[in-house]
Image (cartoon, rainbow, N blue to C red):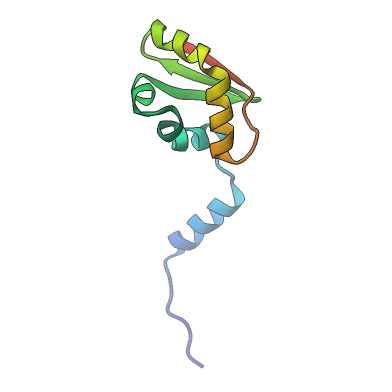
Length: 96
């Protein structure tokens, strides 16, 4: 019997790390943000924190923060749908 060719340990460790450590809620939201929010909003605002179901979005201007506050329930529902589970219940906006 011949032995299989050796493979780099980095590929084995990357696969193991992906299985053991689930992606953070923030990382998951950031990965779908542009598709869910649209290019205009994605350019003006970005998810900056997610904790206990509250997503904090940092906006480049107060007018964008106000606009997103008005869209909060719709954005939250669309984000949850894109993530495949109900992980967010509140959207909080700040300027910065």
